[in-house]
Image (cartoon, rainbow, N blue to C red; front, side, top):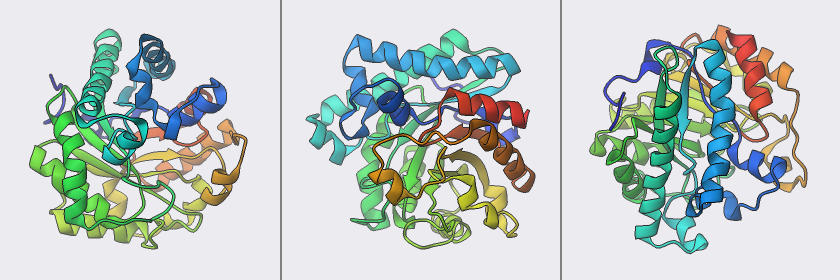
Amino acid sequence: MSHYRDNLPQLKDTLFLTDGGLETTLVFHKGMELPYFAAFDLLRHDAGVARLRRYYEAYIEITRHRDLGFLLEAPTWRANADWRVKLGYDARTLAAANRRAIDLMLELRDHHETPESPMVISGNLGPRGDGYQATARMSAAEARRYHAHQIETFADTAADMVAAFTLTYVDEAIGIVQAAREAAIPVAISFTLETDGRIPAGETLAGAIAHTDHETDGYAAYYMINCAHPTHFMHLLQEEGEWRERTRGLRANASKRSHAELDESPDLDAGNPGELGLEYRRIREWLPRLSVLGGCCGTDHRHLGAICAACT
């Protein structure tokens, strides 16, 4: 059952690490085929589960050496209705995959959690469409109905919270927060940022956070930034506003390339892990409530090790 659903420890400014770029690590470093970047498809067989277990344990080892918390994000970013059709799942087998993912996170927590290294389990959601472009948009009401199935599944498991990543427009974020509130489970919202620091739909990050909070009575536990290199949004950090207090998580890309360049690239740009760690340290000076540190496209355990070393 849920450890922390009513009392998320990362809201107490305890520093938590999370993982890096799951899909890019498996595809480019491990040579695995992931149709539609759907890591949850590995849960179908024992070898895939073992591969995922080893992936998470590499990050857990980093945190335990420094007595930090760890946020276990389930490998379910693609486990929603549109993507399950492309992958040949029906609604029943998709729900079973989401539950199996949380069971794996619970197994890892039971085996590795210590009083000095608490572990929070998060049901991971991705966008209905593309994580780089604000295409095929839904209204907030449509987004609430669409994502409610996955959120309700997570709410009936040991997950402490849900988190939605690579969101590109505000209405989808609003719908997800509304569905989480109806399911009585905490939710974090993470927006994709472009090279100009705006979300793909064009709003500023501050505006997107304020808009989402206004429409949902501030229900989201916190907000995050992901799928952008720090150089894409460093210029925003001196801007005053409530958004700075509400932003508690960062999962940056390893590469300084734009999303269009990443989409077209046949190789993985792993950037400079040491440089990325120092950039995280600078960002924490501007965003003092930042308490969840992880990675996105192109990052792996090397980057998280450097981030950990720089920020602790």
